[in-house]
Amino acid sequence: MTFITNSEAETAALGAALAERLRGGGVVALTGELGAGKTVFIRGLAKGLGVSARVTSPTFTIVNEYPGDTPLFHIDMYRLSSAGELIDAGWDDYAAREGVIAAEWSDIAPELIPEDAARVGIVDLGGDSRRVTIDLPEAPL
Ligand SMILES: Nc1ncnc2c1ncn2[C@@H]1O[C@H](COP(=O)(O)OP(=O)(O)OP(=O)(O)O)[C@@H](O)[C@H]1O
Ligand SMILES: [Mg+2]
Image (cartoon, rainbow, N blue to C red; front, side, top):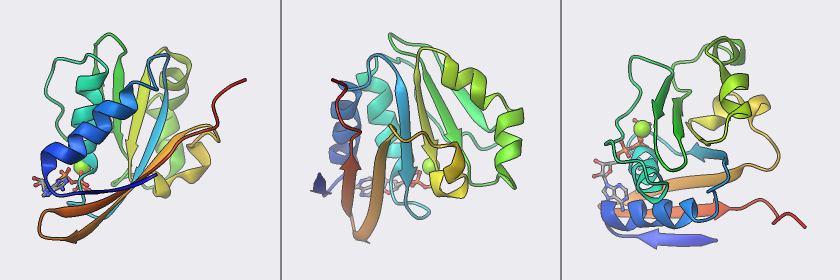
């Protein structure tokens, strides 16, 4: 599905809507250039998951963990030099836990993204306009 948003709040609302599908956990793989709105989307996702803390970019850590009705693990792959670094940071442990992993710059380590991940691509169309494409995994039988 592709949406055009015209404000930060509209992009966050798409994130919150996606949360409805992810109550049991899962991976959200985000792509988009610097300042596209990946963190904004994840902020909305967090709200939808019942996370009360304000989500900020994990600048000094690879993973930020937020408790909530469904816990959120916010990962920024931007500064990773290899997928191995993320494995060392505990990727497998996060993936095994009940919670949602939201990974910014997921194209940096595509081998870590499971096939059934939800994929979110955001493109800056100029001004406050963004094209947000959300590809959901097929619903389980
Ligand atoms: N329609 C919109 N949707 C999302 N963000 C928007 C929109 N219009 C303007 N913005 C602004 O764009 C910026 C998006 O920043 P954000 O931190 O979410 O980007 P990012 O993709 O996470 O970048 P980075 O790769 O640096 O982490 C914010 O300053 C936000 O206010
Ligand atoms: Mg960000």
